[in-house]
Image 1 (tube, rainbow, N blue to C red):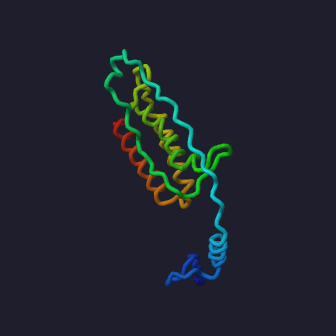
Image 2: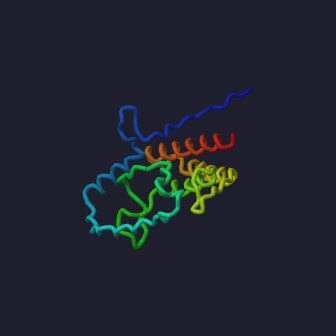
Image 3: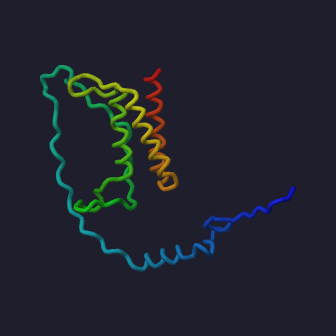
Length: 170
């Protein structure tokens, strides 16, 4: 049998002592160039006042004294770079947390945990599973591109939704 030579390439950015490797020096140069030219701060406009909350009629006995269901998770906002939508004030655009929350929102409805306005539930475990699977696709496609907090948020969200799904499925 002939033996093939195996060649190993170290693709890490840093040396064992923590210095930047030669092939990544351009990143250090970009960082120092950006630090020399501080960006001009954008004028900040105050956000518009929130719309008044719409309440159910007080005559409905099912609604009296009932509080709205708690949200699945409240993400902590981070001060990193964000996607800005044209026409919105700086800093008020959607975040990764908003995307994950929008995909996860119907799961509580389809698991039957949230009552519809007419007092009924819309339990549909197959649709709940679809939205959970969509979150898994999001996790797979963003692997390595999320901050530690975003990744932890998504992992926790998926875990909680899967546990609740298994509880309902029986």
